[in-house]
Image (cartoon, rainbow, N blue to C red; front, side):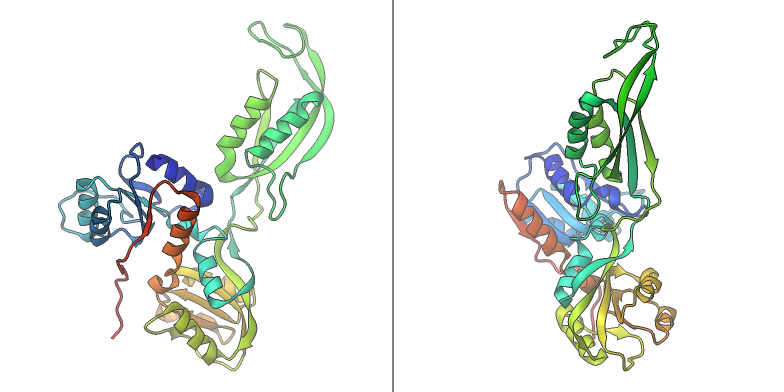
Amino acid sequence: MTIREVLSILNTWAPLANAEGFDNVGLLVGDDQKEVSNILVAHDALETVVLEAAQKSCNLIVCFHPIIFSGLKQLTGKTYVERAVIQAIKNDIAIFAIHTALDNVPHGVNYGMSQALGLTDCSVLIPKEEQLFKLTTYVPHDASQAVTDAVFKAGAGQLGNYSECHFETEGMGTFKPEANAQPFVGEKGVRHQQPETQLHFVFEKDKRDTIIKALKNAHPYEEVAYEITALVNSHPSLGMGQIGSLEKAMSPAAFLAHTKQVFDTGGIRHSKIGQKPIQKVAVLGGSGAFAIAAAKRAGADAYVTADLKYHDFYQAEDRLLLADIGHYESERFTKNIIANYLTEKIRNFAIILSEENTNPINYF
């Protein structure tokens, strides 16, 4: 199996098209045509992790954080980023980063946090926008079922917990085949009227190319008429953070103690502890100050995240408990989620969990 084939499996699970615009996901180092020996799954692809991969005969590192985030202008080994990349090139090891592509899917980073805390009935905290599109096309009546089946198979028609969703209307299409045409129906130079079915499908952004290819392959016409419209609807199952409920309400102090134990953190920075019991909890792995307002709007009693600044804690306004558990700690289950998925999908070689602790923050 090649690196490209492994990355295709990962892209099906956590499409790179769902990553945030600021991010640098994908294959950062290496040749995707290489055959995979073994895979090392890590949180950060630091130099020590690359050397661990070499020692364990892994020529692909699948990591959460991208080691290259902004442009590299030189490779002299002066920075930790340059040293990691140099070692990867020297040892012929590819590095793939998944980061916010995994943040935005329901089974990703925030799922790990929700499960660890024991939350149920979880939903997306900030649904992702500009991810849904509508395909409209026109086919002869007799071909509508074959085209519909092909477009469904390519991934269109998914709406939350429902699949194979679409809408049909009947009408009359007209066209005149010109001199160089090879018409499926009608005669060259003569305007033709054809009873047609208009088909409508909703689809996700990352499936666009596959769906259009399937449409054209299944459609009987030489020239396929179709329209793609961007929808302003937010996606119900893609986006940042999750919100759910504890089975039983806890006091704020008990909730903080539970959270500290679950995430094995050296300490929790938190806002003022009030008297309100904690039952509805919002979570967001990594830097989550931007979602405080969303957690309040969603009615969260507590919001667990990381990297909050001094003034961010004022935003609690006695309406919820803000808990900063640390960046690494909030994402600590992520590499296990990645490793478990790859182990389930690939049996050809070993999926190895990195033993390196790449958390740069220590507690005194």
